Length: 153
Image (cartoon, rainbow, N blue to C red; front, side, top):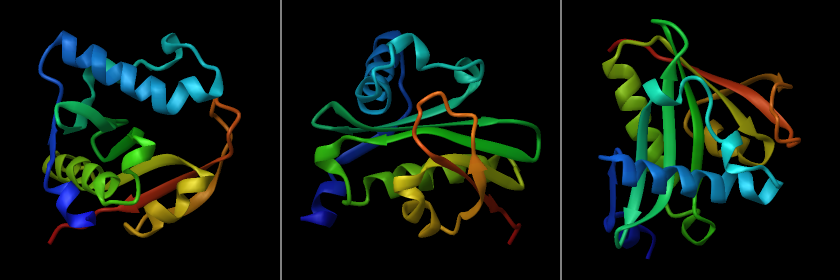
């Protein structure tokens, strides 16, 4: 079943305001609502200028991810989420692959992210290194700063 589902998921960026609203609602529902955070806490100053990706299954959003650039050399991934019912089926890995492809196309040399500690292994499996404890989260959940250096082939 694992491989069959991933073939039925369509990955793309939101196309219009209605889709962005649905995408934002999904991100909030999975990442922030369980922590008692309001939907207003979802966005940061980079959201408007970021590259967003969503995974759709039967036209329903089941995954999200976002990247912004801190400078010319460093990209940051945020808001990675997969609906609980669809986890451990390669969907998050595909979102990460799409974000990394976009980052490489834009010539960054390093990717950073602040992973919730319960998903560190997910990122390690994609060659991210745990760098240090991250203390800047407003979620109250322990995070670790991770990074991946990109090399030209």
